[in-house]
Length: 340
Ligand code: PBG
Image (cartoon, rainbow, N blue to C red; front, side):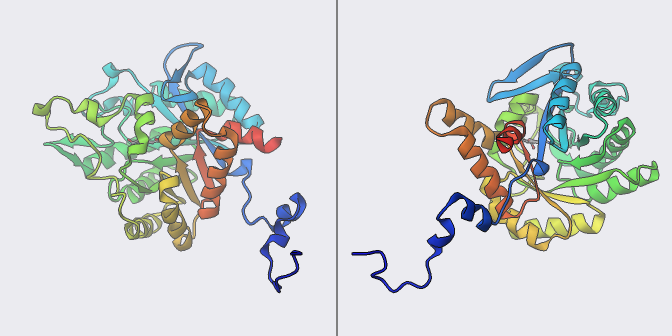
């Protein structure tokens, strides 16, 4: 039977016939412009340590971080999101170290800004790297104290902006933090520091490898039951079952002055990315988190998946869902792959 035996005037395969026609018909493009590289910084000199559950991802000392950032900048990556890995002895229940103007994190921001001024620096304002309880906020009487946490975060944000941060990213999910941060930054004269809000951040199990990287897992910190520390983040991060609630969070963040809105994680929440994008008049970011990275890496190491093909497909899917930019541990590799 010849292929014209059926009377089919509509044949979608026409647009898939050759590589060039597929290029013309392509709806979504992944570009290095869309990639943000998360980076882990640790104390010390001239060292890097691989995160065991995140193959090919490292904690760098500041000097090595600069080399790495120069590479990312040369590849065309526009921004990095910086996270500090601190030793346990610097972590306290009130997270005071977060406000030390001379600690690892502001120092890293200053050195990076000086070395690669064009590379946008996104800083994290949440207390988990500094908190001996492993929480993003201050724990009082077994609960996360919303307003006390925001006060510390406002001081952190000003410290980060003073050190040279371009974009402040609250990843804590306290109520009202975007408005409070905006006011604090403006009062301190940092009217140009943008806020990338973690708008819809879910209480996800896919953060496991990141918590390994920072040694910040609340279930480990909460081991002693007499301390009355919640073993998970369910009272502030969102319930994975909720989608509509992301729009409520978005409306609040936009009202409070967020410049960009993030959904996190990405792959199990593509519908949320889509909904947020439909309702948002600011750019939408998605965080392709550590566990999503680890899954592809582990399968690739076993020879079960093709790492490059699967990573690019995942990132394209996140863009197709509606994300304008993607925080991903694949950023450097993806930038290289996109150059090929
Ligand atoms: C904490 C924070 C987390 C991540 C970014 N900031 C983990 C958490 O909420 O416990 C996760 C990122 C990742 O898994 O890649 N403020």
